[in-house]
Amino acid sequence: MSAQKKVIITCAVTGAIHTPSMSPHLPITAKEIADAAVGAVEAGAAIIHLHARDPVTGKPDQRPEAFVPFLKDIKARSDAVINLTTGGSPYMTVQERMQPAKVLKPEVASMNMGTMNFGLFPMLQRFKEFKHDWERPYLEGSKDLIFRNTYGDLETVLIELSANQTRYEFECYDTSHLYNLAHFVDRGLVQAPFFVQTVFGILGGIGSHPDDVMHMKRTADRLFGADYRWSVLGAGRSQMPIAAMSAAMGGNVRVGLEDSLWIGAGKLAESNAQQVRKVREIIEGLGLEVATPAEAREILALKGKDAVAF
Image 1 (cartoon, rainbow, N blue to C red):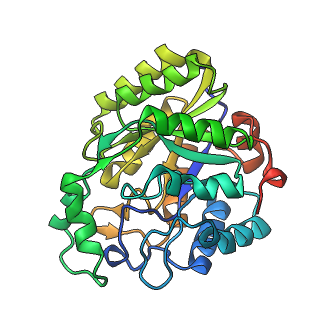
Image 2: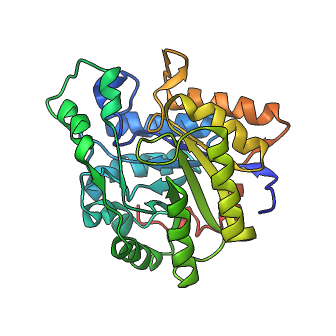
């Protein structure tokens, strides 16, 4: 894969993994999510990856109407590329998870590329007190959780969302997920250039050692050559070290409070923008430049913000 001249920063503003009790800085309401997203764009993020939450309990909410208030606000206040989750929560069906992207037709949708164990329960070692009744069982239940992404599920999402000219952030948590993606490329259901987000440090997926990063990169290069654009997501404390590796190797990066609540050892990040600013310092310290939303659209061959349904 040829190196890009600009580094795309994706910011995952809020997600289904972390619960509201874990950080007072996790955006929950539509206004909080919109403000966090706009702040991240102003700090240098080109793509904003979004989940929705119940504004009272903070529980993941995958109804399309839960997304609309903050999507319209973000679109009005920034030029960001909007990336909607089809991952939703591992406890949801694929039909529930894909509804926001199917109805709202974003430029990009995330797509988990394989069925896997998805262990959230180690978080209970750090977090002991919870505000909402659903949070502890949500984490404990992941001991027996299988995050379903069958070939039938993946085919359904690809066919139904591609009809809207939505492209994908292919989230690959292990080597097998890269081979699953290659299967759909061979079948003609995925068109180049495709955006591969290699994910490190989730229990059930590949680890976060530098050798793991290199192994995923070598495998993707061998399978996809110049047809893909590489990005990394390091979970928890792995976020910035793995982002630095990717940038130094000509790749892109993803940060945000969905992936890590931290900005340093034992110190909670106070905003998504703070994480974007930190990774931007790393990128520019390597003599590289950060891509604007317009440049990200060109690199990823996106349809443009005027072609969405919000």
